[in-house]
Length: 210
Ligand SMILES: O=C(O)c1cccc(C(=O)CC[C@H]2O[C@@H](n3cnc4c(=O)[nH]cnc43)[C@H](O)[C@@H]2O)c1
Image (cartoon, rainbow, N blue to C red):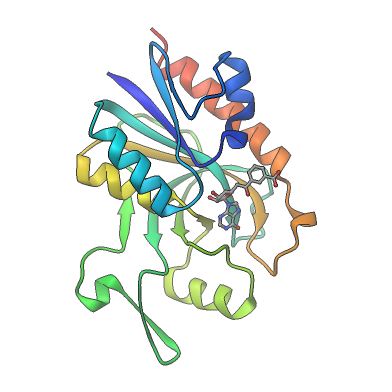
């Protein structure tokens, strides 16, 4: 069986596409791995991945992307293994407090990666959001509630779909920005994509080639 590589945007896999000489499509099949570009966000990701996993079986789903980081001791461009990811906005406001769907009694709000493959990267906890966090009050609330290191817009949806389908999964992200008041000039998207793609090319060559 093959590995399915899942990313929100093609831009995040620019050098991966170039290295393996892949066509520019949103779904690509090769002998040892497939690539699925879902679109940005948990809804697009859950839809595309759920639909796709219904059609094909994989031994591993590998979610790749860039991410924001809450921890300023981690350098921009660092590549991290997100082993736990939380649906951070799914719940209810109760005055100034936030109640997760778990606290509301509607099920799990956190999902984990699952794979026997040894990954030589720092393991961290992430959150997934629909709206990129950009103000101090929300940052404080998210840190108090979840103590996350990274923030993305898809990770928890990938873990959720893989949990439901009982498929191994990994989430590897490179840090493009710190989570702060929005200032795109501070983002190092190019560096993050370069480092992510180098890791991904190496991983695929070591773990999926025949
Ligand atoms: O500006 C660009 O050149 C550019 C090129 C490729 C991709 C992007 C994106 O913004 C990708 C969106 C993707 O990024 C993740 N992300 C990155 N930082 C954060 C964050 O601070 N909070 C939440 N998500 C973040 C997210 O998973 C999006 O899907 C730009």
